[in-house]
Image (cartoon, rainbow, N blue to C red):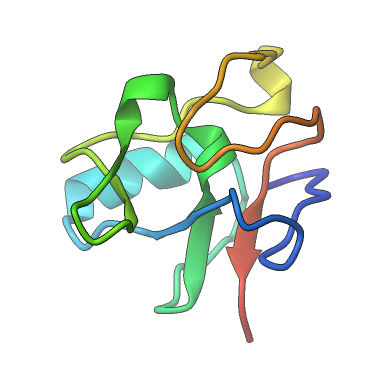
Length: 102
């Protein structure tokens, strides 16, 4: 995301989530991330720090997954500050991130 300081190597507590394939849900994600001209690729990801507490769960295999139809909502422009523990979140205050791999 804009002003992102996080990356895939910064913590084993972060998880990175693919953009949804559903066109309507994907459009909602794109509206929320506010990246003008951003084009989603198969390598584009959104960091777990953008999602609410109940949006992420840990599967039986230990993978951090998103609940169906959730939309990222926690960004610097909406004054996100939440200190509660969430699956896939490490405990420091930095800006949110969207990972885009070459």
